[in-house]
Image (cartoon, rainbow, N blue to C red; front, side, top):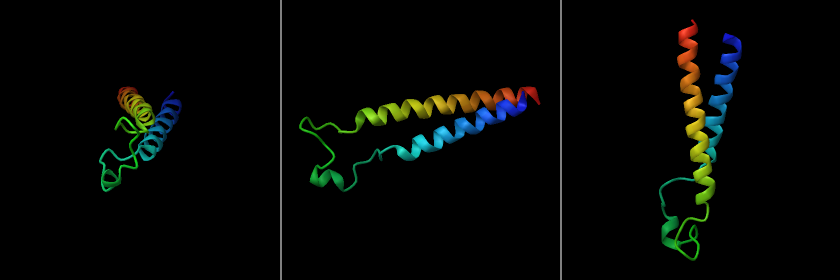
Length: 75
């Protein structure tokens, strides 16, 4: 049981790491000067991708948190 839980925690941590590194930066930086990251309406062109990655990070974090609590309770 603890081996399965350890594998689930490793997968959840890998999901969180990959999802965080794939996200675009939240700050505009110097890209705001040229306006290359915005579309006609002034919104970010990659907003839906970032929203999906935010949900993946939250799901992975919750899974990692619950897995660690259960792992502590078992041992």
